[in-house]
Structure formats: structure tokens, C-alpha cells
Length: 180
Picture 1 (cartoon, rainbow, N blue to C red):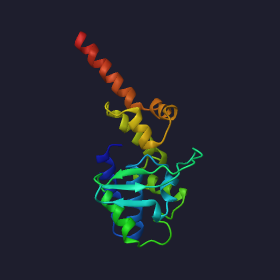
Picture 2: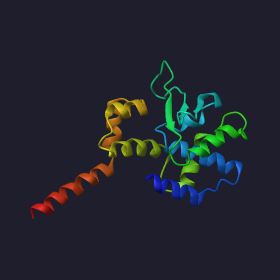
Picture 3: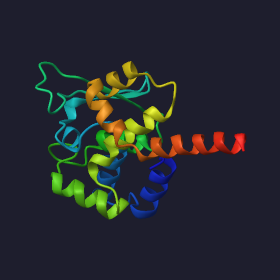
Picture 4: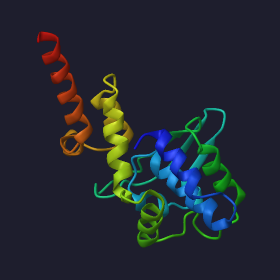
């Protein structure tokens, strides 16, 4: 899913005209622009979000799941990413009680399915990684830093990329057509 497709679908399906829709949009936007698992977002307390407007990043302070972490691994999300102003507004307006995204994993499944039909919550993580590696300048070091994942785990995501398979086939066919 391209950023354009994400934004167009989100804007077409969910208008920010109610508490529920503002929360839903903020969650989905954050999920799209991060490699985090769904629970790594909805379990966050407000104290886990640091908004550094002068550096133009939102820092999410968390322990990454499934890693038996000994220390927190914060992730930075550029505030210049499209629609991130909605996430900041959601966090700052405090119209919610408790956690900013006080929802369950079932709610996330419903939101993603209702909005994006054929996608599922973990797709956003997969898309983040495969899209990042679509840029040939992306290094393993950069992706490991951004995701907190090992090379072996990143490789598992990349092995499933149909997009990479198609690019390979297109380049091969282009070479064949040049040689006659």
C-alpha cells in the first residue's frame, strides 16, 4: 500500500468528525508510519509519547515486544510525515481518558478490516519494512535501528515480498526485450 493509497482510503472512509473517528484515524496513521506491532501502539501511556516540535519528531518510548527487552527502545516518527499533525492533535487534546488509544486488539482488527478491507494489522509492519527496502539506499543498519529487528527477522519479512519478486521479473523481462 503506497502512502497515497493509504491517505486516500483513510480520507474517503473516515472523517475526523467524532471522538471515535479522530481516535481511529490517529491510531491508523501512527500504525502506517511506524514498524510497531498493534499492541506496541495501543498499550502506550501518554507519558510514552514525547513531542519534540523543534526537532519535528514524535518519540514513542517503549519496550519492544517479543524481545525480552532489558531497556526501552524509543522510536522516532517524523512529524513531517503526512497526517502526523492529527496524531499530535489527538495526543495533545486529551479528550480521552486513560491511555490515548484505549482499545483492544479486536478493535484494531475491526478498524483495519473496515477501512482497508483486504489488509490486516500486521500488514502495516510488513509494508513499512518492505517499502523501506524498496529504496536501494536503505541500509540494514538503518532498518535495524528503525525496527529494532535482527537481520534474520528482517530477512523473513523480505522473503515474503511479492513486490520484490515482481521488480526482479520486470527487470529480467526488460533485459530480455533489449537482447531480442
